Length: 400
Ligand code: PLP
Image 1 (cartoon, rainbow, N blue to C red):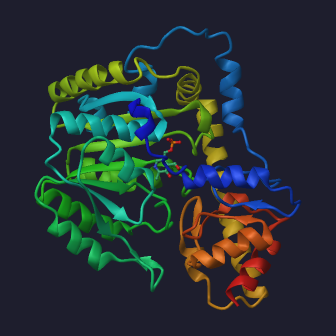
Image 2 (tube, rainbow, N blue to C red; image 1 turned 180 degrees about the vertical axis):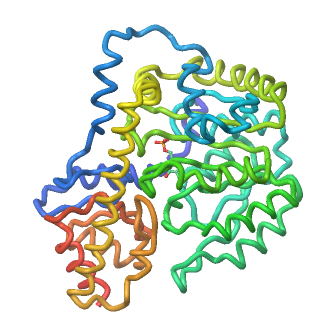
């Protein structure tokens, strides 16, 4: 008998499975609040205006291979986006970078880089809770993955005391994964003052920070605001570490797989060596990254006009999400749903973390055709004027 007969069945990814279940649901009332993908006011996927402009600009660019590290102008554009043109990090060329298969591929590339050149004897600390894939990516690369406290479910708030205690308890030199902004799934980010305290612990304990930056600009509508923690760590504290960028959400390029790894080093020589290793690792992983989406992003970075439009697009998306957040809470209150729901208004980014039980989530799906992650995280962008009251009414009925 072949070893294939011994292969176990792996459960499908819950979020992708939820989307498939939603697609099979024939009800006209159905609402998809599962997957984190932006939807416009009519519930439709949205192609950013800046992306439409960029598409025209890159017409006829052909289908040749990109270099192993991807488009150089894209990588440099990403560094400038993170740190600004005048940054010493940019001027001194202290970043080793590689284009990646979006945010996921970016985290994976950093994980195998660290596994090969920093050693898997270092533990990786991820927030509790976090995006499901963090554990899978770092365990897959051979690391022992541990949690640090993040969320106080009793107060629906950041558990900052515990977070600090846990980071202080990490062995020196551990790797710590941080969400740059718009923490997934809780929507709760540290304040600037809290980031300063986290930065001090990272520095004192020689932790290696990895910023997962999947929502830059999408969160507040401003790249500068959303880069605050990244800039504080690498400019103000002069730390070394990694940033894993994704353009899935902030450019709406989900399926094009556009991302970038940035490893911030102390010197130009370090950056050059790091980059050579990223190139070596990338070659045997994907050979070279996909061209189309990176060309679109580069066209946006290199045109003042498109860049201006992108900023407007970011505000369009973040403002609509904020409006829906408030409208959901207004409707919950209108229908006398027990509780203040103020936590939903206070949360940031693409998601709302409702605080429902698994049974309530299941009832919403089976009885009302409303789909959300089992932990009651909702993608706020799935709400619109036409469905928000229905959703609020149904939530009220399952929690009352
Ligand atoms: N990191 C976080 C926290 C996310 O929520 C996501 C997507 O949902 C990603 C990374 C990566 O997404 P992608 O691989 O589509 O860029």
